[in-house]
Amino acid sequence: MGFVRLTAAVAALSMLCACSSVVEGTPRGERPDPTKVAGLDITTGDSGPKKGVPDADLHVENGDGGEMDRLAINTLADVQEFWTAELPAQFGGKAFEPVKRLVSYDSTGKGVEVCKIDTAGVANAFYCSLDDSITWDRGDLLPMLNDSFGPLAVVTVLAHEMGHAVQYKLGSASGITQNTPSIVKEQQADCYAGTFFRWMAEDKAKHFQISTGPGLNKVLQTMFFIRDSAGQSFEKQGAHGSAFDRVSAFQFGFARGAKRCADIDEAEIQQRITERKFDPKDTDTGQGRGNAKVDSEQYLQALERSLREAYKSSGATFPALDRAGTNECNDAKTTNPASFCPASNQVGLDLPGLVRVGTPPKKGQKGGIGDFAAFAVIASRFSLSIQKATGFRLDDEAAGQRTACLTGAWAGETNKPTAELKLSPGDLDEAVAELLADNSLIAADVNGQTVPSGFARVEAFGDGFFGGSSTCVRKYSN
Image 1 (cartoon, rainbow, N blue to C red):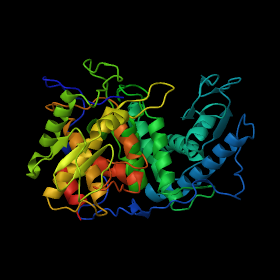
Image 2 (cartoon, one colour; image 1 turned 60 degrees about the vertical axis):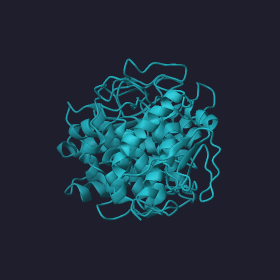
Image 3 (tube, rainbow, N blue to C red; image 1 turned 30 degrees about the vertical axis):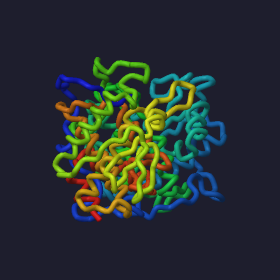
Image 4 (cartoon, rainbow, N blue to C red; image 1 turned 135 degrees about the horizontal axis):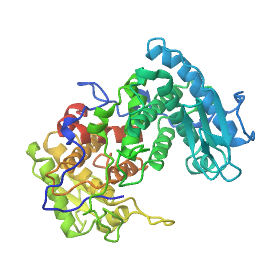
């Protein structure tokens, strides 16, 4: 994971600048309701398998009848029921035929041959068009997902694999050919998984249920977990995308439906995808490659300049950064590890706290997130001064969304070739991790009241990243 680096040279980036991309989400003129997720009420009820519902009866090759196989079978039964109705409804009456083979195996035991692959030692789940099959590892992969994130993590992965089956069954309507890059196929599959989860969130699935609050957050955390590693190129065979890319695609399907998924093509990927290789100058200085020590005065000054540059069109009087964090404030609560005081127009910094957030965990150890998460927290408090100067309330329902959006707009500015402070691979994934935290400051108002839905937080940040500050003002006005 990485954040930013100082450079005097102009580096060529493979990504287009933020203002050139289409903004997803709510249509122009309609402010998103912060109490909803893509039009659905935010709920906090149970998520996972429904109680008292009989298991589905699907034929599985090489199964053991255990918990993981039952979870997979019930998932695939629900997903296929969804696509049986959805495919003809969305694609001109195109019929959906269930996949021909379902295969279970234990990667810790004897392998089986599926799709010309020996599964011994292969912890994976995959769709194969050669024999129209979906295969999963009940011995390692599914238990690991279930233990880490709950049963809906298993549902997420298998719904993604069924998305590949949908591509195959759609044929030319999916836009997929033999020469289509992996990243297009994988982004479409994530998007198709999102459409199924929307159906589940509407309580239409027979075997599963999901809350649009904590439950959906867990699914997005699963997307973060199964992201490509930082520094991988989206042009690489087998690339799936960064966490930011994968969550974005999932959200497109959840909010916009299956046709939006089929629209994902190479041209969109070139515009939107954020996954890229490390620059040779992104060295490891002891914090992990591309990471800086966030209390470094050099980087704090560069951050302040980048924030002023990002919001220069606002005409606001920019706040001072109080590095001692001693500022008393009589018109807002103190939030840690950074806070904004409207009365004094200062951003107070708890530098030890920011260092804890900005220090990525080492293998096998607990830690923070990464330097971009820490810098984005500062940026979020800085953006409150812009909102105050332009007449917005800092403590209403829209403030948290607007803050996330404006923080995303700043991040988009650091993605430009002329930026002094630049994004490194993995930076936006760090933002996703912070945005999905229970008390995310990136998506909080001046008093630390965060947007209740992690889905809505990430969506607002993405709006700013792709659309810039003007999108934030238009879309998230009072």
